[in-house]
Length: 295
Length: 295
Image 1 (tube, one colour):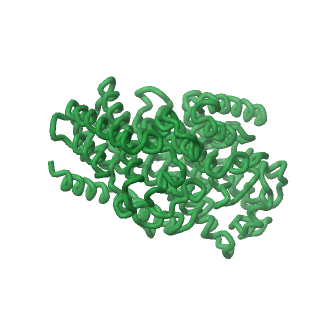
Image 2: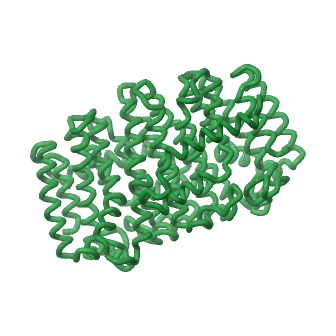
Image 3: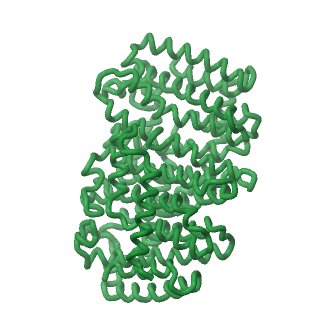
């Protein structure tokens, strides 16, 4: 598989759909819509939407039918970045290679743009895929995503991350933060792709478990990148987590052990992906993409 | 109708349901859940949930089936208060008679608690009313609420309110802010009650229109209260809007004209309510409750 070509085609499809779903930059209220678009159309890799479509494909569904739902997860991801970057939280000024929203606009607008993007995600999930046949899956999609990104998921992980910052290395706490903060949304992307393809019952759980472990891989790779990457490859400030005293994989286990964990997770996820979609599929390609970002 | 007794019974039912829906205050992550409950269980009047149930009743539905969905609107309302009160936005320290969340906890947790409450609302709307028969209505509920409270609705109104603050009185702008900032969620409460009762097509539009005008009444009454109320009756700092140079009804039209508008709106809404539910119904009672708050 030509991973580069595949990812480029996916990104173009997703970006065109995001452009269609979001209100025009000059639609009332223009400054808010402008900020929302500024945040969404940075150099995002669109990992979550691509994963959702890959999981849908692997589950025998039509990825064309789920492109809007896939975009909803990018709206969620973008909201979480805007709010995480706020002065009161991580106070980051660089994201996806550009000034963060509260720097490019202002803090009130950054708060509201994040709120609006999160909200818009549910407008999309409630409406797509259209048609009576999908009504039950749309409602379940809203529920599933909300649980994944709420107080017991992504937002909960962010809250614990704040509390843990500057504390002693704690493997159990690190695991809890990783599962919630990054793993939950990545896991939801995979599970939602399967759900929208019509998968239910235990087989949906298999996709969910694969997604959760892929989320862990993503976070381990991200933590390593924070230590070894540059601003150019990261699109954000490197060394930021370490400097802020964040609980990360390398901080708790050391860089060598983090790299070994990355290898082991990658191997087992590749086997899982093959079990789900056969060899040479797009889920497997995404595993190797997520793992290789730090090479 | 015994309005006082009715509202008390409704509030108890709604508060008990909110208590059941929200994670326990000591569930991980405890500080976040504690803050969410602190914000939700202030002295809220539960106007939006009561309205949703009243509209459901007026439309021939069973208000017992929609108590969770009604609570979802209270979660949305609470999130909007937490974020509006933030230092970067209205910088308010008193709400529902107690310190605001960023004062009682801290600013990062207030941002996250708001995010989590908004998210939880969609987890509830996606799951209730349970059962296959309601699946289509649940998905539509998520979409409807998201549109009402997103960038073209409630959050958009807040963004324009920020821009308008300190500017010249502008009737058109005031109308736009009121419709979006308060009217949209009140309108959604009424429309959602009808939708969940099974109303669709033009008759749903009648409920939506009634809700929108009721939202306007609510905001006019609120603006008047800001001028004439005390901290004890308001549960928040009075005179705050005027001091901040906010665009309000009394600021644009004067207090007398605002009071006349309140009377006129109340009269026409009472007639509309009677058309929807007959005389002596709960929608009518809510109209007089919303209007009378400032007497």
